[in-house]
Figure 1: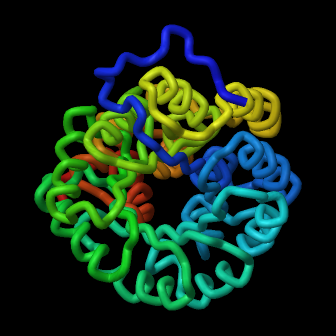
Figure 2: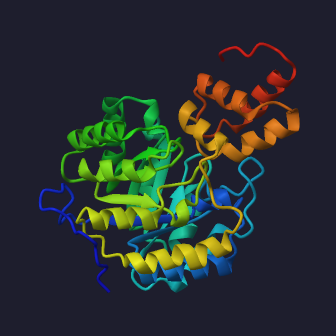
Figure 3: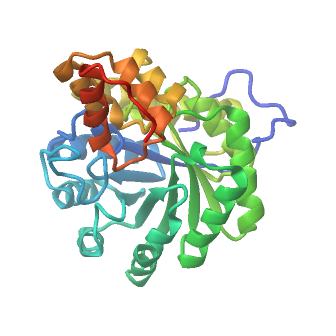
Length: 357
């Protein structure tokens, strides 16, 4: 069914007629909101709905990717391979994707995911550490997978620096490279600058993508800015489910792209039904919001998955979560440094002066 657009686009709209692919991360990034407790049945129902609505790529794994189920990151209710297998059985047209962070996930687990039926692997590193993805990208190409380089916390380097890191990923075999606003700290003009820098560094042969978090309320706007600057694939999650204040809401993003005249191939009304009738029901009480802690993530430039860890530390040690977030921002912590949250909380609780480390 073709979704009607009230008012319709103008011929001068920069996205008019552009084909934009949509990747939905409800069943991966959204796992953070659910403390990684999605069941096989949840995955089956949500995947079936997203596939029927015309989503191009559906990402499924623990919130921290393959191998993320652990004491440090939170134990998942189900094994990633079981969840991928459940999703694979429901898909009739979409591509199935998994996330892998080198140092958490292994090439062995990547092979298991390929056997489970993934089409795409997204290899994620800190925005200045693309070189640690080289062996994983090469292994993925050998497995015949579509490959994505995922440059996390993209606000923590310059546009030019991000372009240099993107080149490393492209030369290692990435078919697509993403600007990833893991902290929800970027503003639209900053997304435009980084997307343009990637296009200049990579040329037309490599696709660009955007993964936007909503900690400053800019998720959908940032995704649209990336598309206008040349990104061909945009991430979202149903109802914005995800770490921190969540991601750009897929159903809102697609509706906005409709208004802009872009072609997504998604049944917008059907996708709204999935968000309201399926995801909101399964995730009742877990949907993210723009509360104090979420906003502080974007304000301080902190990895979005640190939200729940910080809240637990604040409660355990009797200190203000705002103080922890601001100190983490001063220390420029990155993904994988969750232990620093406890260090900061203990120092604050003891009344010691927290110094730059």
